[in-house]
Length: 61
Ligand SMILES: [Zn+2]
Image 1: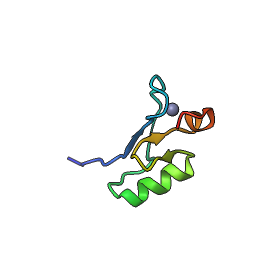
Image 2: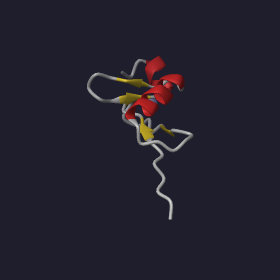
Image 3: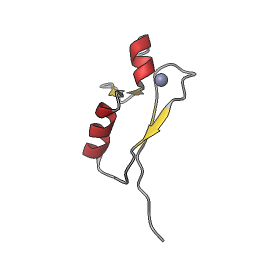
């Protein structure tokens, strides 16, 4: 049995957004997740909320 550590990122922008992404590789390292989020256009607010690219552009920050 193999353990899979796919990091899932869920949007906390608009309440009804529900956008979700995940790393295309297995990782449990926060630095990997940060790098992937940045590359994919996601943002992390100082409050810990993840914002998808669409919400970021729409101003739901
Ligand atoms: Zn969103």
